[in-house]
Image 1 (tube, rainbow, N blue to C red):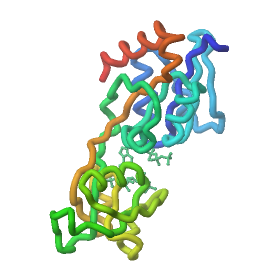
Image 2 (image 1 turned 30 degrees about the vertical axis):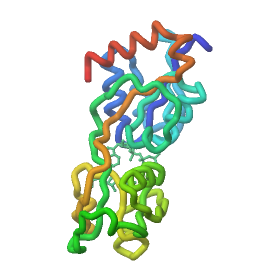
Image 3 (image 1 turned 45 degrees about the vertical axis):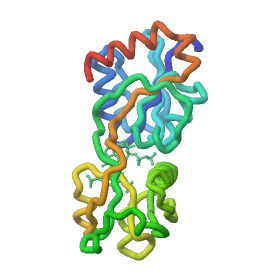
Length: 212
Ligand SMILES: Nc1ncnc2c1ncn2[C@@H]1O[C@H](COP(=O)(O)OP(=O)(O)OP(=O)(O)O)[C@@H](O)[C@H]1O
Ligand SMILES: O=P(O)(O)OC[C@H]1O[C@H](OP(=O)(O)OP(=O)(O)O)[C@H](O)[C@@H]1O
């Protein structure tokens, strides 16, 4: 079993592109698209295993070595700051991590006036670092989804969240204030696997590199 290479792939919005990308280098994990309740699949001929996990859990499985490789958004990596090797930007899943607020609020670009405001977000660590870097103290309210609701009902003044089409902001009367980071999907590798399974992992990295 230990000579198998295991890849952790996130369910959700980057699943299909991840499966398609691996397909281009001859790694067939289309079983992951089957909507079954099975969480791990094996291809013994190729000595490969694929596991399907929540996007936010991918770094944990890779850090502990349960998966040798993983696919995950840069937003998740920034938030978790785990000790992982991140060799490749896969260039899909593009979005931006933004500060946003209700439209029509007096927009004030002087960060010192932002002190003591409440910010709702799924990304408390990134948010804290970002505002600390500006010398601004904020109160962070951790949420798990539908972040755009928070300023509409008085839970926070601003939000930090991902924006891709901008439709969720628009439909909820919010506007972008500033960009924290541009986000894409990354390949991550367990540091020990990189040594013990070096040839196979290098082959995969070099193969993927040609298709991104
Ligand atoms: N508009 C977007 N909103 C959210 N994520 C996006 C968007 N566009 C691209 N992404 C990328 O897709 C990744 C996975 O998002 P997805 O919505 O599938 O999972 P999640 O709900 O964030 O995670 P989890 O299910 O673990 O809570 C994000 O981490 C981000 O890198
Ligand atoms: O700019 P847009 O294209 O509208 O995309 C942005 C929205 O998509 C994500 O939410 P998701 O769909 O993952 O749901 P969630 O709020 O439950 O996390 C993100 O958190 C925004 O709410």
